Image 1 (cartoon, rainbow, N blue to C red):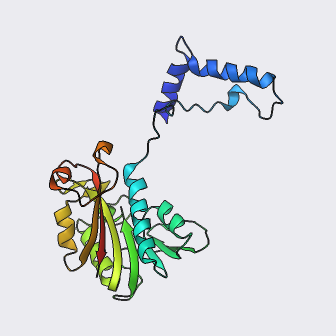
Image 2: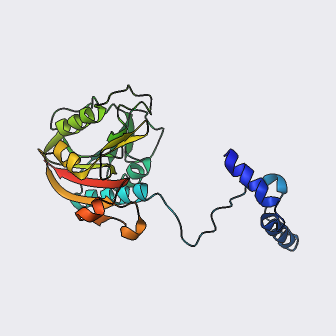
Image 3: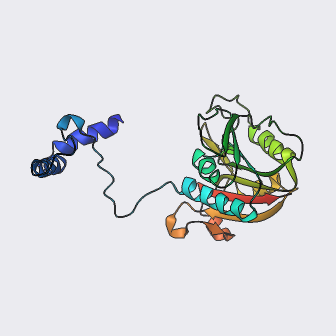
Length: 246
């Protein structure tokens, strides 16, 4: 924020003062209208980086919920369980499928068809093989790194994955998303990065129904199903989307 404020003052003090010039133009237009709004310099709220040719977005967090929603809609479960994925996912999915959302830090989110509950991925409140539709997306990579006040545990991700496999029912569907790169590493204390092979080995007792990659570089595509090895080997911080079935 401080950096943005500093840039703003440098911007308005520049000789051309384009931002304040635009304000002055709008102020002149206001004088000739019904003055439907208050327009005053005390209310300046400068947005100086949005005049781009294209709309930018976080590729991981736009594409992976879109991928998961399409898959869940295809098999249309009676209820879906989501473990700590982005709130945008459960809130939209609950428009047409009832969702129970669990998080270590429960969200104060109130919508029809959506239950927001407290839950620990290392000790899920479900019986063995009882859940037919479950997702855990862009979450496991954080477990055990202390970022969200959880206890430090180098193997926290392995324990979380064991829990997901424990509760998945026979014939059940699991949607799993993690950062993907050409080598496995921990970026402490943000997240882990996995390889495709390491994820598949962790779920070797399940069947892979679909694998999709969200590449780092938009020129390599948006959501690439069954990417080749050359594309996988280009990734440092891509996003891997795995649909498993028991």
